[in-house]
Length: 332
Image (cartoon, rainbow, N blue to C red):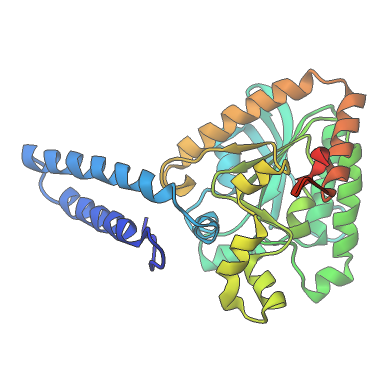
């Protein structure tokens, strides 16, 4: 993975990572023999060590760039690698089908469930078809239709979030974008089945929260979750998107920041170098955490599950100052 231009004290190390990757690529093209095999093994060990050093020092802005990596596994990839017998369902039964929101019936280690999430595209054609992973009102209404189906048949719901935000176009607003998201927030709080939400890449604003009201909310290590993108924040506060890196530092939107203040339940580690380096391993790590969470939630009575889910989201944003320190959520 090329880490791009360098602007901080990890720059020399990151340039060395890029150089080692290039050397490994060149040696791999040579006719294999004992000498090239030894060289490859030596370079790979050095590369692994450097990656650990570099990725332990990433800034919030660099983490956000990783969350947007074009080869990062998308929601469809996680569905294919984690769930079985997936059957996609289409349409909101009101207007049309929204390709930016996908979902359907599946089984999770033998247990029937509903799985859904925001889907991006990799090439230009796919990106346009998926509207760059930004759902419109019919996408949120389709998601709620699937969740109501899960409730009817007592099936757990798994949601996967990777969106810069809900689509802000005129047509979407005319068809009730805000109402669709607000309705989802209310109905997800009432849903009588376990809901597990996982932020796999970008978790942008109400577009993410519209399918993010869960009993457990997880984030991948290099994902982010924010009321606004760093670029949007910089444009509002400084009238200059070039200050996006400064905004990223101030917003506290990385997985570690949000875990520390209790807005997410757990951070799921990614393969060395990011989830894009090994989709199968990334999916395995997510799968393991989902299994544990589902087992925990199934043991909780429905009424207690609903009370806990409602109270945790009502407490978000509550801040109290005590002895010069800020406390949030349930701490407040």
